[in-house]
Length: 131
Image 1 (cartoon, rainbow, N blue to C red):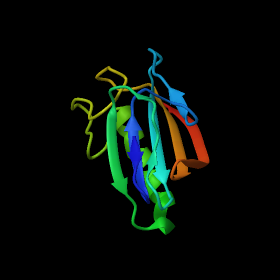
Image 2: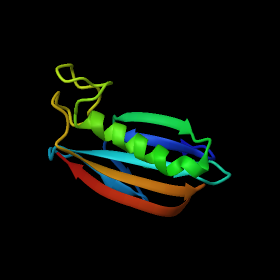
Image 3: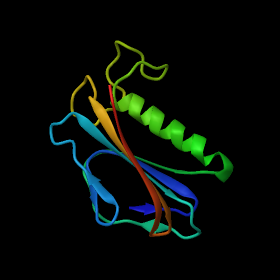
Image 4: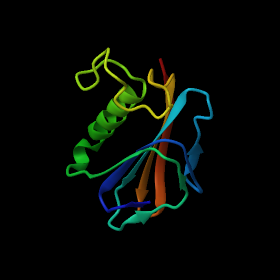
């Protein structure tokens, strides 16, 4: 899965990437989110297993605001995976995007954020958010 220079990949779904990490819902109700941010000047290309999930590629334009961009990306993704109320996902409407295979959404989300320079991992952050 390529991630262009100064760009990001957002992925929600099960994954297993050697040297990066793995996550599988496996009936637990805890969904998986992976965000790879390539701060380098060359494209990264991680190979592994990405099961059927949601993918979003984008470019960041202001490295000074990257922390807020990551917060917004992971916050909105978590909101959708948990089927929580928001302007984009009002209560009473079908779930806007959970990968836990149930209309009610996930019980929680395992979030992994990986900063890379090309294929060189620089720093990783991991947390699990539950209702």
